[in-house]
Length: 119
Length: 110
Image (cartoon, rainbow over all chains, first blue to last red; front, side, top):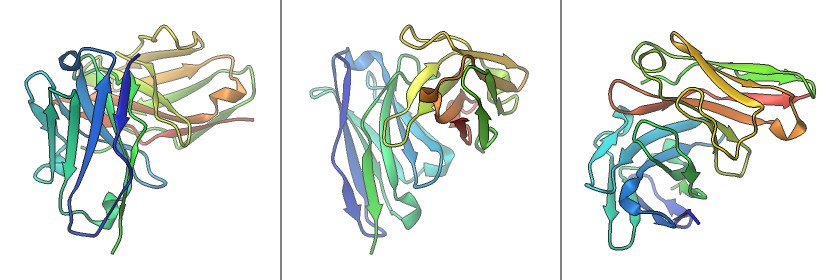
């Protein structure tokens, strides 16, 4: 069965970086795009960016340009999202999710990874 | 990219129908038939209920339907049930090659 399993909760200090992993299984890794979406406490969903696991190409939301990096490891079918220069507003639940087309709906989601930013 | 505009809350009694709107611009909702809708229960991952404006995954109830007119997409829930109480988000592809979510709508079953 399709699974997207994310790494565990993180606690970081302001200014630090965080790297969250999303290990996929149950389908052909390169056949689906992976999105990263976050939800801050009491806020709505926010799209951060997308990676094509097949070639590694990425597109990021303008808000995160220069601060986010999405990569993949085809040998382990894992996608990574690294966010640098963390501030308190980055405290959120981060999700990975897949879509068949980059433009389309996200049909399977990871369980979410909590990132706490605190001095 | 600003979030798409959704009503903050919508409510209805069991058995009734409700509609949630999602308003964007010609650069996103109005320009592409790539609008999706998600149901989000607190503490769980969001669930895709509508893709490509009106396509419903096989496992999703027929009570959920989507449509679009101009720059506004809509999600209709018919035969409202207690289990439909959740947050609902639309999303759209944009002319920047990105996606953008709506502001979210809390559905309450009275």
